[in-house]
Image 1 (cartoon, rainbow, N blue to C red):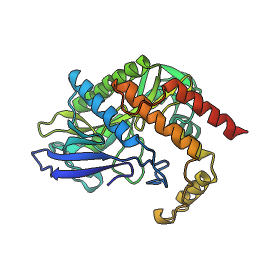
Image 2: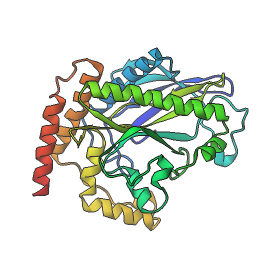
Image 3: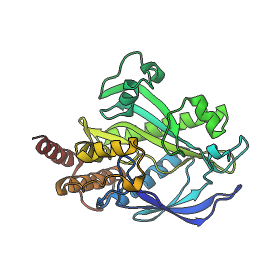
Image 4: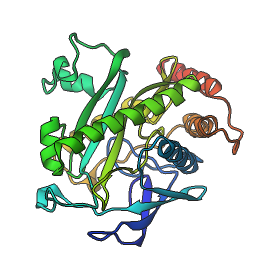
Amino acid sequence: MGSVKNIVVKKEASEGTMGIGVFEFTDDYSVFDYGKMPDTIPGKGEALCRTAAYNFRQLEKLGIKTHFRSLASDNEMEINLVRVLYPQRNEIAMETTNYLVPLEIIYRNSLPEGSSVFKRIANGSLKPSDLGLEHMPKPGERLEKPIMDVSTKLEVGDRYLTWEEARELAKISQKQIEEIKETAIRIDDFITKKAESLGLEHADGKVEFAISPKNEIMLVDVAGTLDEDRMLSDGVHVSKQVLRDYYKTTPWADAMIKAKESGKPQESWPRPEALPKELLEIVSNMYKSVCEAWCGIKIWNAPGIEEIVHSYKDFHEKQEK
C-alpha cells in the first residue's frame, strides 16, 4: 500500500521468475513525505494511470524494456513484478537477478525554482562542477544538455550518491550502470519532445529500473506523469509542484519541518489543512487536461492547458494579496 497508488500482488516474484501485480492509482496525493493528505483530487488516479500506460507503450516501441503488461481498467495497470531486496541487509550480490535496482535516477533539463539542486548547493553538499556546470546556476535556468543525479531508493530518507557509490550499492556492473544512464536519457528525450508538442517545458523527472531474470535492464514503476516529472507552461508549474508550492505557504510546512527535525514519530506529525476548493478544482482539471492532450483522448472534456494555467495564475495572485 502506497500513499498515492497501491500494488495488488496476483503472483509473487521468485528468484528466477517475475510475478504479476496490479497498480491501483488512487485520487490521493502526498507532499513532503507526509503520506495521504486530508482530501482527494478527482480524476487524478485515472489521469496518471492512462498517461503512464501511454508512455510505456511508446517507450516499448523505441525498444526500451518495461514491466508494463496492460491497462486493466481506468485506474488499474497490470505489471510484471520483481523482488524487492535490501542492500542494507546484504540481500543483493553481483550475480543476483530479478530484483528492483535500489536507486532513483533523476534527469534535469532545467533548474526551476524549487529544485533540490539549489538547496544542496546552499548547504555545500553539491558544487556546480558536480553537475558539469562551469557557473552558479539560477532558478529557471535551462541547461544546454540534460544532467543526471542518482539517489537511494529503499532507505528511510533518500541520499544522493556518486555513480560509483550507486553501482556498488546496487551490485551492478559498470556496463549496466552506463546502460541505465543511457536509457534514462532516452526516456527523458521522449518525454521532453512529447511535452514540447503540447507547449510544455519538461524540467526534470525520475525513473526506476529493475534487473530482469535474464539480467536485463527494465524500466519499472511509472515515468513521465505529473507526479514523477515537473512540467511548466510559460514558467508556471503544471505538475504536482503546484501542490508543494501551495503547502509551502501554510504554517503546516514549518511545523512539519520542526516535527521531522525533532525526530517525532510520524503519527504525531501535525495534520495539514485541506486544499482550498478553488485550487482543488484547478489541480483536478490540470491532471485531466494534460492526460487528454498527452494521450490524444477525450474523457472529461477538461479545459485546455492554457486555460488552466490562466486560472492558476489568477488564484496565485489572489493568494498573494
